[in-house]
Length: 195
Image (cartoon, rainbow, N blue to C red; front, side, top):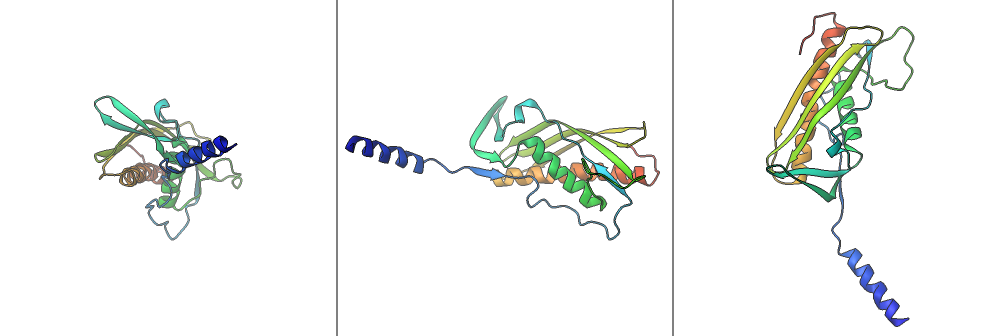
């Protein structure tokens, strides 16, 4: 019995010395432009964002050298990266436009809705160097066959540490959100919008 007690103390001591996990969010503290005074007369829909297979895990995946990547067990996203990017983009675009992301939510009859689809092709994290998001996105008014498809590449220089890395990704999301919002605003105004 005494040996069991000693083993339990050793196991508990080992658990106490393991490093703590840190969780990060792209939408928490997101620097979104203030909403315009008048609410837009249309809605947006942002379905789920797609991301490369290698960044579908909650752990941060960082680039550490030529072709080398490390999966960090103690540094994690609060939700899967696709969900983090999707929520942050939704907040950035709807905040800049002064509208509502009504995805999976009923809207008034005859309401104008712009559907925004996003495919993140690269999501790179290089601590102390850069945070990069390369996304192909499209905007289409629901009920219309016309689609505007564009690409935004946002690379932000970051300082040392994972907080700085995540802050760089937040800035990249805001830049991409601004590109998308500009396209939606032009389409809503009846202007010919390009990338």
